[in-house]
Image 1: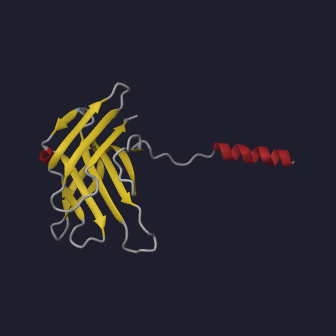
Image 2: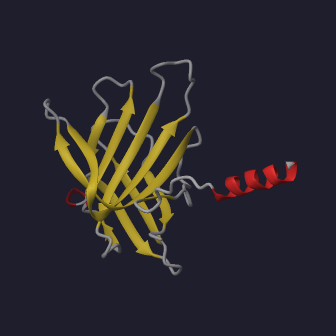
Image 3: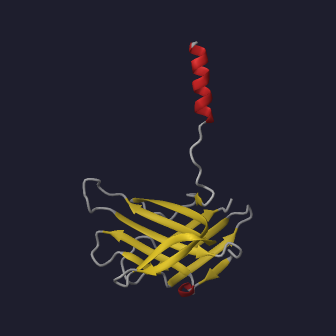
Length: 172
């Protein structure tokens, strides 16, 4: 009887599977080589999404990721902080929308790209979303079917920690 219960328990354990959300959201941390040492970086590829750029009642910019036919890349840096400090967190995000049918790009004309920087901290008047206008954006296809994203940028409105992103990603 013990062996039967053990076999049944083993079958149930092996047949369980957590929900897989990787169909629309792929998380890749393959080449986060420019992540500052005092934090953690992540990189997500969101397929069949678009960036909706909106403004709130005060005229401040904010983004929403919505269903669409584009590809949204999201890079996030979170600074390590003392958990005892309630207002001690600091986070930066970069959002980029690309056409999945034409991923090869190299441009310094960032004004015409859907490319945004976000800063989240207890920094009065210096948080929120900002349009990235200055820098270099390059996406190239690699031999194995993956892509290399290189972004070097500067935000004039607020201080920033992350100034470069160099990530390899795949759409599979």
